[in-house]
Image (cartoon, rainbow, N blue to C red; front, side, top):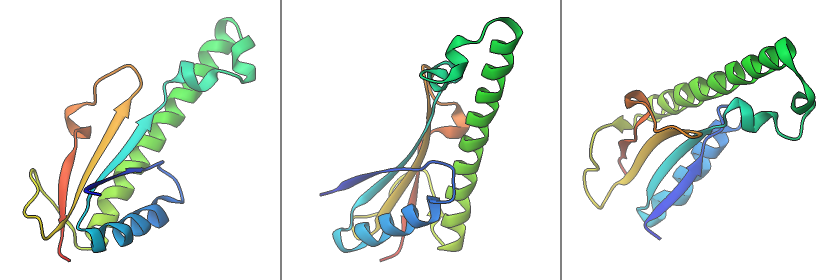
Length: 127
């Protein structure tokens, strides 16, 4: 196994997920791809009472869902950077060598390409 995909949610479990991924990758010298998927307001509204809202109520509900989704994405990115800093993992543009565990963080947004700031960034961790 050379690559492990790790989903980052932007919540309390991010640290545990990060540490588990590092522990799994180290003995395998595996590449870790961290991914956060931002769910759009329309998709988040499915199967909730928001589906039945109309007019201003619908706009308000969708605005709240959009704000919440952006908040989770910002927290996920912040958690990723903070955990890399705490573990002294350098964020760089390209992976170094095969002896390292490599990390890359990305955010995907429903129906849109990631912005420049959310494109993958490989990270190096000394074994």
